[in-house]
Length: 376
Image 1: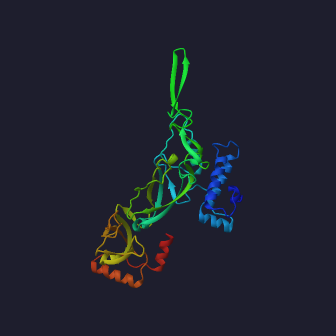
Image 2: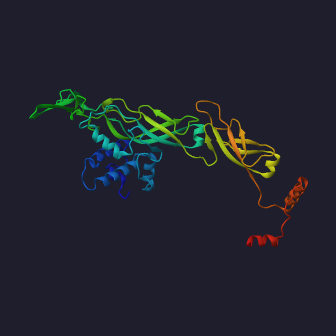
C-alpha cells in the first residue's frame, strides 16, 4: 500500500460510504482484466481492490486515517470473518470474480440469461463456547446486490422495458443457411436480450441495466444454541441478487466448530480429562473442573478405588441440546498421577501402608546410590 488509498479510488478523505462504493465500481469496470487489456490492468485492479478492502471497512478506514497503514490489509472481502465455500455453484471468492460475472450478465452468448439470483455458501467458524451459549456473528462477503440507484429495476431516468428489436420479443433468432441440400434453419438465443425478449431503453448507468451491482455485504447471523458442526443456516434473499428485480438467491451458512483445548464433543455429550492423585483415586474425592459455560464449575465425584483411564459420568453438564432446554452429559476420563518425588514423611507413611498390606517395596536409596543411578 505505497500509494494513498483515497487517490487510488479517486475520492477525497471525507467521502461517504456510498461515494466510495460508486468510485470503486466505476474504476473496477475500467481496470478489470476482462475489459482492460493493458499489461498492468491486473496489477492496478488488485491495487484498487486492496484500497477498497480498507476504505469500505469502518474499523480499517479509521486505523488507516490515523496511522496511514493497515497490517495485513490486503485480501478479499471476507475480512477474516468467514471461510468461503462454493457449495451450490453460486459462491464467489472476491470482487474479481464478481465483476467477471457482472460483465457476463448482460450478454449470455448462446445460452439464456439466468434472471434469478443463485444461492451462495459460506463457512462460519465458531468456538464451542459460542455454540453452547448462542452467538451473533457478523459476516462480511462480496455479492451481486440489488442496485441502489434503480432499486434493482435496471431502469435509468426515463427508462422503460421494451420489446427486443432484434428478436422481436421471441427470445430466439432464426438464421437460414443455404446448402446444396436445401435451406437449413437454426434457432439460437438472442444475444441482444439474452433470450428474455425484452431490452431496456435508457438503462441505469450504475448497473448498466442489470438491476444489480458488485457490492460488499454485511449481515448478522444468529447462531442457535447447540448447533452441530456442519449444520447449515439459510438466510433468505442474501445470496446473489436477481436481474431486473428477479428473486435473489439465499446465503447458506455452514457452521464449522473449532477444536477445543479441553473438551471433545460427541453429539450433545462432552468428554474431558482430569488428573487425580493416587490417594484421591484410592480413597475417593470430589474435584472441581471448569464447564463449557463461563464461570461454570462442575463437581466430579471420583469413586473409591478409581482406576487410571476410568470414565466418570456427570449428568446434565454436556452441551445444550439443539432447540431444547436440556443438556447432554459430561464424561470425565480420569488420569491417576504418581508423584516422582516423596518427602521423608510421605515415604514413611507409604512404607507403613505397604507393610499393612503385606507388599514388598524397595528400601530407600542413599544419595550416593541415586547419583550412581543418574550416571548409569
